[in-house]
Image 1 (tube, rainbow, N blue to C red):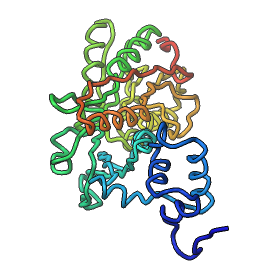
Image 2: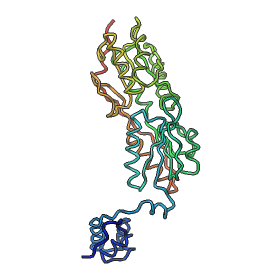
Image 3: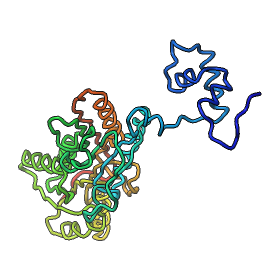
Image 4: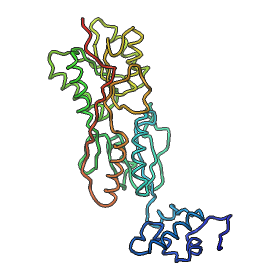
Length: 334
């Protein structure tokens, strides 16, 4: 039996020699281009030989021949928000099917200063999540750009989530349960997704003149939310329901309510946003607006692939889902 030297990497030439075929045949088979050109029997012999010899396609050489790097940059505001992990998972899953890897780059830390230097290697594209096209202008210069979860921009493919409908549904559900003092715990960040939620909350509450709206801006960490919410819940005219821009913010509301002896779901109704699996479990389970974060990343990568292929993809707005659980109930009497 013909063998190869076990102390060096197996090459396509080795596979061709052992399988008894030409190197071009090996290339066609292993690059998925053999249909109609190579017999199934020969193709099977090539793949089995490659597997037995431990051959792997040299992706670096392949990208060099194609004039690409095989790398897409996913730019996010920060690494501290677990929601971006789901976005990355979706983008990486779709990218893998097109020979594209995804590298995550945080544009800024919580203090506004990026902990890393901007990547210098060649890029096949940039996907910006929760950041505008202007924010990533330096990184995306000369390469295809797709924007996720931000305001649509003419000439730039955009994939958003219908957070407005999510907020409108949350307000409507609370009003139907009899709540007339509703607070919005707003993420104190200048981002389109949070501005959109605030706009719809305000509009929905204006359409219900019998109800009073309270707006409480806060940083995202639960400890900060707890500090901001404590005096609000201790007031004589405290709200009976709170809608939070993030599930982690909602855990800060839970902590504040517990400090004051209030029972979530009975004395105070609480709704969050994201409904991500990584959110810490709460008692009672948190009602939340589920955002399709993994699909957001996947759709973003599909749009980038289209753009790289010379086609301008249409903008997409992904639907969200309202998940009602025991953290909301009828407004307390009195």
